[in-house]
Length: 324
Image 1 (cartoon, one colour):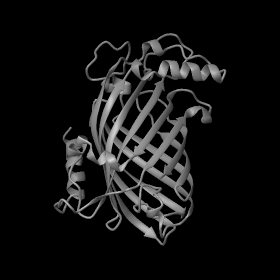
Image 2: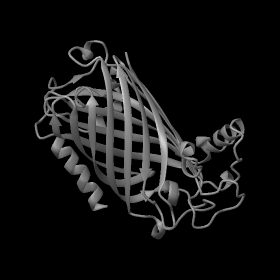
Image 3: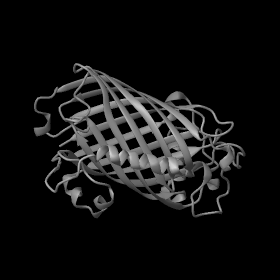
Image 4: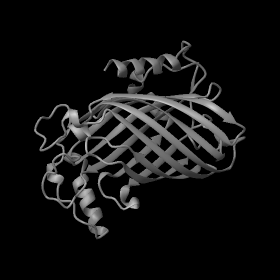
């Protein structure tokens, strides 16, 4: 636990080395909407992380939310983005056709929660700090049983039969921070960005670090959040075509999708803490295409085994981002 707390303190100290004045930063006028859909069926699998969606909205008016009071200080001369990001993810064991608990396998689990977040972006110093409050629920209230059952019915796929043994309803409440800093740039076609992040909460508690390599016809990573409104696009490429490679390592303290929520003790089945892997690696490859205020991305994600006896896993994600 000291490791996680220490990384939080490091993130804030790196991002706030100068004291903030009331007029030292500004809120971006950009209005953004983004959606992602992920599923492992593209790799002909149907287990572990099996489907997920996110919906993100960034609006200047969210800068008046009282949640911003707990999202940390803001560095001098930076640009703020305020938003809400909804997450829905579902997880299953190896065989969804089994109508019984599969011991030593991943439990059925799903969650839906919102990130109430703020991004502090500094194009000149080329760093970005994202902080968020997570609020939601894990368990049947997320609706994964009905969603996956209906989806499989439409696709004429096997019916999942074990959702009655999923992790029960529990609170998702947490706080997370991520710091990104440019490490290298070669002209306008190559960027290397490093990152450090940490999360403290009832869903996940972890600390991690990673890097992102971007290559192609692209705009500077720290110019905006990937797309911008009409005024923010001045002087930038109208069209973008690029590839990204990301690697990330995490040290895990707690994972409720494996171990159950913190407040309920009546889950039909969970994995013991001793079976959960405390280090997890992840790799992501992305192809992106953008024009003006629209960007499309497709990604392939790989993750190392998360528990004893588990397998590596991979899935595909599609994303759309639009700026107004």
